[in-house]
Length: 368
Ligand SMILES: Cc1ncc(COP(=O)(O)O)c(C=O)c1O
Image 1 (cartoon, rainbow, N blue to C red):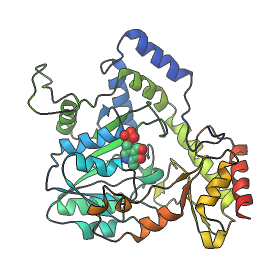
Image 2 (image 1 turned 60 degrees about the vertical axis):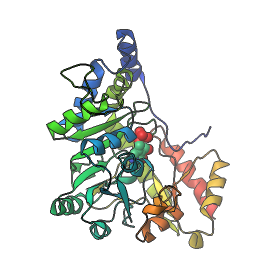
Image 3 (image 1 turned 90 degrees about the vertical axis):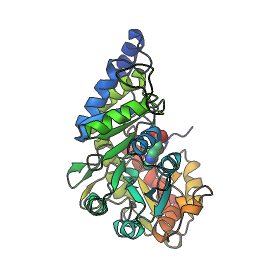
């Protein structure tokens, strides 16, 4: 246990009250008033018509791709720098992932590399809003439209993040969110698909529930999954959602404090925020230039660990890992460099100004 963990949920009385109400109601599985309430409120918050709550974010991605009929021999473009769930969902539907490099300036899918990767078999693009920073959605949507491709936004880490003043998750044909315990808001485990397409929303609801015909119980026209969210999870989610703006403000304040404390250190690159983006800094991450700072990333992490400060490596590039290597047909200089240098710092909304001052002080001491 660290005194300063990378992420920690903030769960209060409102959450407790809702969960107790759900337990007392007896609706502890996937029926109950909180599920629809959470779906409607979250969809409204992002600015999309329909929400389909799921058991986790990975299930949301799988459900979205299955509902879009993506299958064997189709190609789906994913960024090299992301959590494995993004590419796993493509593999679950039997499609071929095409791994594309990121933009080194904001660490998300590189739109010009994306264009080069499109073939006659490409069916969809999964832009990932990494660490709470938006992708370049105008360029991605234009490219998708031009080639007739689906866009499935992976917004697991970016609740409330914005692109040109509009919330991410409102651009693609479907957007998928995660509510895992370390996310901006949590339902314990949980996820959601959002879409403006009513038919697609209904299809995702059917597939989420074993493919059961909604008008004829226990009759199955298609093979589905059990990807339902429970009423207990949704009860937690409704209470968390009422605090989302407060959480985002806290994340942005933490980012400002880190930037103030670390900007003078030569060899440290701060977490980016492009002029067109509002980043929600899911995990505030820095890049360490080992030559300039005179310390390796591992050594810095070890020194911080000795002071009770947890850090986390930025994701390993997909193209380097055993199950995904065979899908790496392009070059990946940006994701390789960012992953090699990147370290995520404690980003929990529970951290105070004094905590951040202490952490930045320890980083300075470790480097000098
Ligand atoms: C980018 C990204 N996509 C998908 C997921 C999957 O979400 P879950 O852990 O809820 O299955 C995560 C979770 O950490 C993620 O970071």
